[in-house]
Amino acid sequence: MKKLVSSIALLVATMPVAAGDFELTGSVGFENRLFFEKGALPGQISTYQPSLELEADLRWQSSDQAWDVVVIPYTRLDAKDGERTHFDLREAYVRWTGDEWTVRAGLGKVFWGVAESVHLVDIINQSDSVEDIDNEDKLGQPMLEVSTQRDWGQITAYIMPGFRKRTFPGADGRLRPALLVDNDLALFDEGTDDDNDVDFALRYSHYFGDWDVGLSFFHGANREARFIPNSEATALIPHYDDITQFGVDIQYTKDAWLWKFEALVRDSAFETYAAAVGGFEYTFYGISEAGADLGLLLEFQYDGRSDDPAIAPFTVADNDVFVGARYALNDADDTSILAGIVTDVNDASMSGVIEATKRFGDNWVAEIEGRFFMNVDPDNVAFAFKDDSHVMFRLTRYF
Image (cartoon, rainbow, N blue to C red; front, side):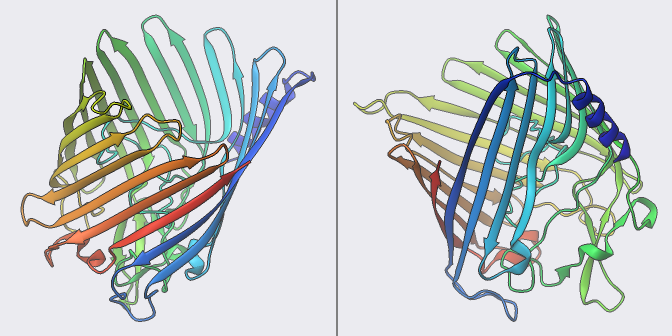
């Protein structure tokens, strides 16, 4: 962390003292989850889970557009689950942009990948799992990022001196395992109490005609944890092991077709395995007089990791098929619906998701998200969520 602070201080020290443009925006959202069944565990929320989320977005850019400062604080206040009430700096960084080089230091967010149903190669940021279980909400990652854009592609290097533990629901929360995860007992590689290592990553990306290609390398603490019960079998201890990961993501775009593929090879002290997700999205454009589009999605998920929790973190996306549809009205209110079902090829366990969004006027956005668990086999990892099907309604005011 000291190296990151030094890097930020160096960047700030070299910033020009000049006038620039400030912009402050933000949002306040009210959210309520409605669970269809009572929780399977004692003390769990039975039906409603209301909460409030607030986010601000402060940006400054120098008059010559070479310097940027971005600060995005976020907080959620949950009425039922104290562990879901939390604050985070999603982003807080200084960035310098030259003709061929860009340097960013601070808390940043980075996304890698192209697939819809699972984000396999995306590893820079830790997941904020109390927000949702889809691994799309991320905590800000301390980093020094150096990138260069050339004719032959873009190369970006990351130095990450700090590790963020994954967030987990509390005793009242839903969408959690039977035993609570105790982050205070978290262990890192070789059973150490603290992660003092510095993580590194490197990514190359470019396009070749209709092909978009990304190659990535990561070495450091795994953002996923193995869960081992404590000696009293009253809580789960997360183990964040050091890993080395090589990843590739490819997207081929041709007319109405989008072909997507992600794959990785991950090595830890316990095993080396490969995983992949691939499929397509085909869009029927202008299917209504108003110009709506309908996209059909199909993806297959494979993961070769051990299903022994003493060896590897669990995953539900090990041998599954995702089928979905995306309907975009292309209207002035940006109305869209995404729905899909994931089916486990081995045991026929199913989970469904639906996401719909619509804007009202210039400042209001309404969203509905639903997660459904059906026919879940007792040996499937998703069995812990079998009673957690729910619908979430969110109304957000932007200012």
